[in-house]
Image: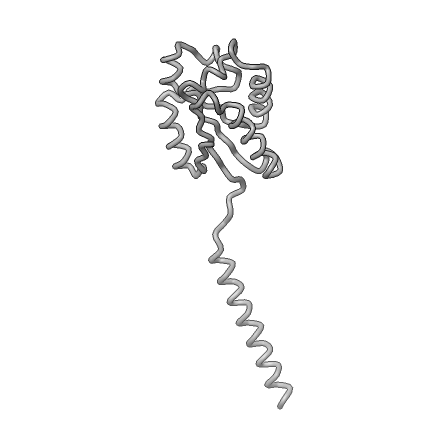
Amino acid sequence: MQIYRRNVLASAAAALSGVFALGAARAAPALPDKSKAVYHLDDLDKVNFVLGNIENHYNGVGGPEHVTIALVVHGPALKAFHAIEASAETAQKVAGFSKAGLGLNACGNTMKAQKVTLQDLLPGFVEARQGGVVRIAELQSQGYVYLRP
């Protein structure tokens, strides 16, 4: 009779543990496959700094396969990405980031003000027709973390 009580208690404890574990598993939120970040760049003096941040971001998470990053450029900073004005270092970094999947967004309003088209910019850019800040807000609504170095 003593053995029977121990078996019943052990079985009850095991069942209770299973119920708690199942409840905890259901309560845990699902983690996204990749984190998402949008970098906001409008200051010409910060172009190299922001590109360095993006490189460090990719390296810090183990590569572009672990993160989705978008860069939204407007204002004076866009001049650094004009194909005829871009430094060799900027052009090389942008080309590499573009191949890695970096979303390159140029503000449509800034493009009009600077009288440039997508063909005038480094390859890989798309136009944010409604404007850079609208694009940033769209990305934030899609779960992107906002970063403005």
